[in-house]
Length: 443
Image 1: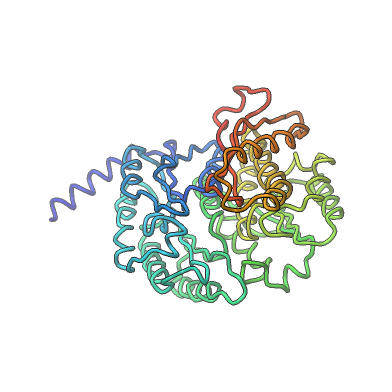
Image 2 (image 1 turned 30 degrees about the vertical axis):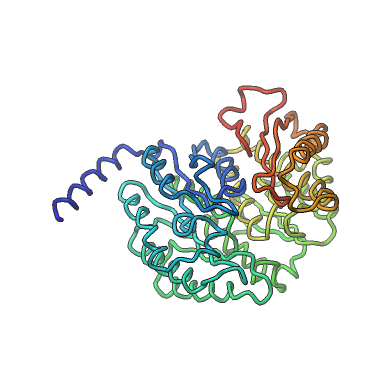
C-alpha cells in the first residue's frame, strides 16, 4: 500500500509541474442551464481565462442526472490548472437531483472522492447548495455532506468552498441551516469557506475569486442602493436576510474589500424611482466604474431603468450587469463581471457580457417572456414553431440595440430545458468579425 501511495504522489507531483496557471481551468457545473455553464465561461473570457466545461450531453437536466463517470473521463483529458466543481453535480447529479435523489449521505460522499484525487494535481474550488424547501426529500443528508465538505476545506483538499442556500421563501429552513453552518465555519476558523444565499451564480463568482487569488488582488468596492432604508431593514426576497448583508457576503466571498474610497461601485436597484436611479448611475459613472445589480423584481430587469440607461449611453459603460435571477444570483453575477472589468478593463468580451445581459435579462425576461406565458402553456415549449418565434422576436428587438459602436446579431435561440424560464442563444458581433475571438460563444 505504501508503494502505491508513493507512486500516486510522484505522479501527482509530475502533473502539477505540467499544469501551470496558463493551462485551462475546468468547470464541472451545477447542471446544463446557461446560467451555470455559458455565463461563467463568458465571465472568464473577460479575464482572458479559458474555462472548459464538459460536453452538454454529460450534464444534468431537470429530468436526467449528470453522467458523472463521463465527466470524470472528460476531466482526465483536460489537464486543467485549476478545477471549479459543483459538489451537488458529482454527489447527486445536479441541482434538481440534490433535492430528489434517494441516496444516503455515505453514498453521496463516495461520489465525491474523485475530487480528493483531483486536488493532488490541481487546486479545487467548490460550491454546494443547501436545498430549497419543500422540495428536498432529505435535508439532513444534504447537510451532512456539506459538513463533511467543511473538513476538506479545513485540510486543504478544497482551496475555497462556497456554501449557498437556494430560493429561501418565507418560512424556509435554509437560512437557519446556513446560519448554523456559518457558526461552525467561524468556530473552526475556516477563512476559505463562505456561506450566503444563492446557487446559480456560484460558478461565476468562484471564477472571479480564483482570478483575484492568482493575481493577489483585493479591489475595493463601494455599494450604493436605490432604496438604502429597505436594503438594511427588510428581508430580501429569496434571501432570508437583508439585502445589505447579501451584498457584503458576496463581495467577501469573491475577495472584494468594502470601502468608500473604491476602485468600483456596485449600484443595487432595489426599488423606487427608476428614472432617478438611472441619473444616479450616470453621475457615478463620471467618477469611476459602476456595475448594476437590478433586484427590484425577481428574475427580470426593470424596463424603464434599462431603457433610460441605454438612451443615455450609461448602459454601454457599465462594468457589469445582472437582473436574471434572485437577488443573490444577480449580486454575485454582477460582482463577478465587475471584478473582471476592474482588473482587465473594457474588451470585446466585456461588450459581449453586456449584450448578453441586455438580451437575456431585459429583452427576454422583461419583455418577451411575459407575453409568451400569456399565450402558451408551459408544457408547449418543445414546440419548434415557438422556438422560431423566439428567435424572430429577439432579432427584431435587438435590431436597434448598440453598445457604443458595437452591434450584435442572434443567429439561433432555443429553450434549453423546454420551459419558459430560461433561453439559450448564439450571439455574434454584427457584422461578424474575427475581433470577437475567442469569445464568439453561445451565451
